[in-house]
Length: 164
Image (cartoon, rainbow, N blue to C red; front, side, top):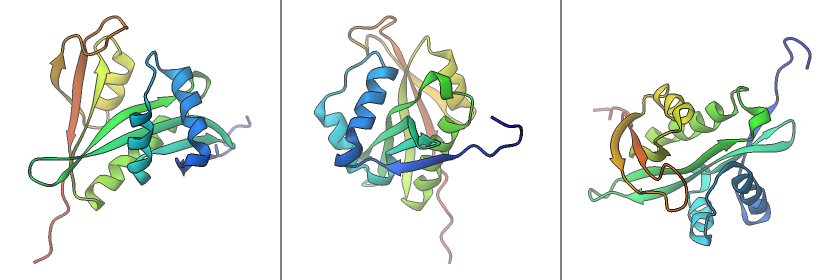
């Protein structure tokens, strides 16, 4: 790549016709196999779930689930966020996460949270850069991977001020 050349990163919605892209990415990126509910939740979250393309090659994704809180407001759960190893460090994960974070106040989302394996320091540090904080530890969260424990990372979303 030439110096100063703009890297073409684009985001696209996940639909039935490109769902296999998300399935293939998840197989390559994560030690967990996801069930059909994961994929139906991802599609139901609409604009909160995106595929990332680098020069027209699908290299990453963020998949979220919308959850109704007791107050009636919604929260966002990041089910997965991943970028293929050769494409890390190019701002793709940042673009995916910023897309979701930018949507949250527009959709009156209370907070956004996720689970991260306790030994995944790269992911923990990545999310902390965006204002996420460790709010809980869950022992034995993961069934077939070691360590089985996870942290819950949460970010409270500042709501836009209502005009009086």
